[in-house]
Structure formats: structure tokens, C-alpha cells
Amino acid sequence: MKGYLENSFNFMLPNELNLYYCGKRVKTLDHFYGPEVRQHYLLMYCVDGSAVCKKDDEEIRFGAHDLYVMFPNEKIYYTTPKGSYWSSWWVGVYGPLTDKLMEMLGVTKNNPFIHIRDSYTMEYLMKEIYDTSLKADTSSKMKCISLLYELFSFLMKDAGSTYKSDIISDVQNIIEHNLSGQISVADLAEKLNINPSYLTRIFKQKLSKSPKDYILDLKIKRAKELLKTTDVSITDIARSIGFDDPLYFSRLFKKRTNLTPTEYRIKKQSK
Image 1 (tube, rainbow, N blue to C red):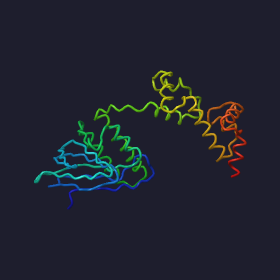
Image 2 (image 1 turned 90 degrees about the vertical axis):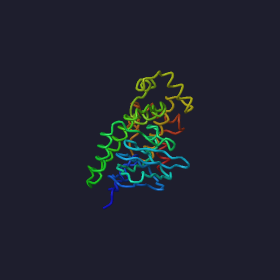
Image 3 (image 1 turned 180 degrees about the vertical axis):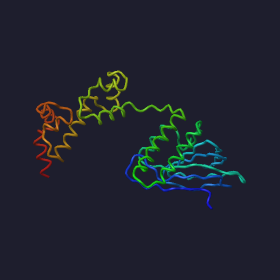
Image 4 (image 1 turned 180 degrees about the horizontal axis):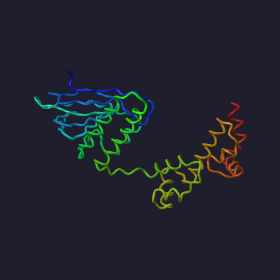
């Protein structure tokens, strides 16, 4: 009987963060892993035992309650002491969000270990992910994805992550999800608890335009998409990007594009 269980996870709907597979190993004698290179992140949590990771010319020792983050396209090789037993949980994860999550956790190829203080919660979450991944219904698949987010939330709390998000990225995210409303620099500054003048200054430094111009550029871009791909009225398009007065929107649109909304629609839809 093999000393480990692993389950492949087949659910392609989420694309920012997803589970590739997960598994567990219980009291395996003389365990070793690799040398192997994977195309995704592998998070391996040691429940019991100890091992030596060999990277380049360096040997790194780790053991119980350590989380080892193995990076994509990195050769991994570790061994346990002869005559010892090894127990662990692991999850293979992928998606565009994973790089950012690792950055937020503060793990790198040169610093891939996190010592877990709350081992009870860690083991509970890993077991929940594994048990839930065995179920085939869509509800369980979605729950499994939510458990991944819960796992990363726990890791950040347990590790005492001091990561602070980039102010400009936060501003861009707020703007992009509120194009239908009236967005002012004062509103943005209030949401982020910073001074409006400071926000305008750092925004110009990084993007070479003011927040006001950036908001307007996105609104016009959205209007162009709707004019080109839909038959929605000019009035409704204006309202959908936060303009109550369609005439004012039309004047602004022409000023930015040298075409009225109607002229733009005819030109683009005739191609």
C-alpha cells in the first residue's frame, strides 16, 4: 500500500487562483522528493518529521510545522534522515493571482519557508481542502476554491504579513469598478484615508496624468466599447458611465475623439 494519497482537481471555471491537486502523506519511512521541476506552485506542509532541502550548493533543514513553498520551474530535491518517518499535506496551485499572493506572504525562491504557529488551523484547512476536493458536485468545487482563499488569508495572518498594497493600484481598482458613478478625487482619497493633494501628486508622478483625467479616459473607453458593440441608446450609455446629461456627455466625447457618439458608432459598426 502506498504511503500517500493525492487527488487531481478538475474545475476550470476560476482563473485567478485554482487548485491543481492536493494530497497527504502519513508516516512514510525514508521519504524523499525529486529532483523534480513543476510548472506551478506547490505548498508542502510538514506535519511530522524533518528533511534537508538541497538547492544549488546549499542545504536547508526544515521540519514539523514548516510550510515549504516550491516555485514554478525550480528544481526541487529534499530527503528525510534514514530510518525516520515523514507526514505532510500539500496543495498544488496556479493562476495569475499566485505570484501576488507569494509576494504578499513574503516568500521567495531564496526564502521559501514559513513556520506555522497555529498548526491546528493549518492542518484543519489542508484536510478540508483535500476532503472537499474528493467531491464531484459543483458546489463542492466552488467551496474548494473558497478554501484556497481562506488558506492564504490564514497564512498571512499566521505569518504576520506586513504587506501594504500599492496606492495607485488601489485607486485604479476603485475607479474601474465604479465607472457608473460620480467619482471625485476627494471620494478616492477618503476611501484610502489619504490627502487628496497627495493622491493627485503621486498619481501624476506614476501615470503622467491626474486622477480626474484617468477617470475620464476610462469612461470614454467604456463608451467606445458600448457604441461599437451594442445598440444601447446614447442616453443610456451616458448614464452607464456616470453622466446624467447626455448632451454634456456628447460634447465631452467629441472633444476627446473628434467625433460625436453617433458618428463614432456609425464609423465603427460599418466596418
